[in-house]
Image 1 (cartoon, rainbow, N blue to C red):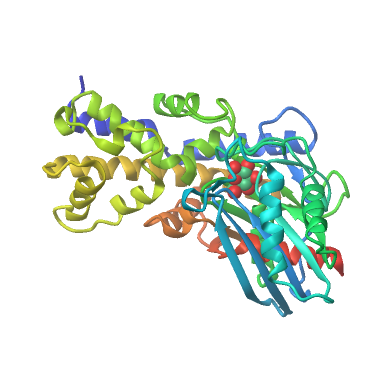
Image 2: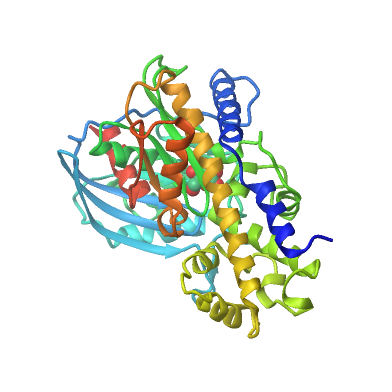
Length: 437
Ligand code: BGC
């Protein structure tokens, strides 16, 4: 059996990659992008969006639905041109609310219940007699048949709602609007949240050509210079969360085999907020089982699946007190452990940090792969528009991502990663504007 310092050293060696390893993943990722684009076997679906970049001069008032993994938001957005926009109204509700008596994520729930609920929210936001073009961000793998036609291929992020896989999302939405007599709300576009984030980022930044979500789920899109469909520029939703040419550990295997869809979304399961807490929990539990920490105590939430979340990771990482007093408080409150040793608290924080570093490195590798596809000589300047709680709220995440990219690309001036908040909602409004005008 390893002693504690050795165990953590081994964990770091298994998880944290060298620059050369990151570049190798970037190369494999680019290879799968190229195969996917040309219709060959690939772990990347490379879904066409039928949209290109906005000019920043699109104007008007648009409705947007942002259907992610945790919440649904309905927004009324004013696009004012010159890259300026305002969210006039925004209503958000969780997909699961035990106190409200609904769980739209469960297999017992039907998609028409959910879309009916959304249509009711919209009814309160619109005035009769005015026409509202609507953009719909639907953040799951879809087969996009046109800008306004999208068939759900599979659920991700552990959602199981019935009656949707294989169906046209927009048709279901249009039916729900009709049932609510909302004939003045006209769906124009269905987009992925990464596409929305890129559109919102590009609305006021001409250099934005990559959009990414680092939140509950993970995925990236980019502006393809030569789309196989038009031969010209088109935003492509990579569905990068399904990338599978990755070095995995026994912990990744354990997490994957206990998930809803084993073998799928391998990258997403190694990097995103939906899974990062669970991954850290599995590692911590393994350390407990080996007798390395907490001396066979009952570790409360740590022994139960999905009880440790990415918010917990953020809490552990944000403790900068000398004795890790906040980690100690967290252990008492969440795990019922009131007499932890400093050494154990340090280990807990190291495990969280190692999981986060690998998440950053893997995502940086995919960005490097995309950059080497769109700009092989690295002669342009690129903005990567990023949205999502992992990127925004995990201590150090955004800075580490930028630094890792700079180091891997050996350039400080090539790429800027920047937070585009509410990107997927605002982007849906921009998509509606691009189609409507
Ligand atoms: C979905 C993507 C989405 C991402 C971020 C993934 O689970 O497959 O379509 O863009 O989550 O929300």
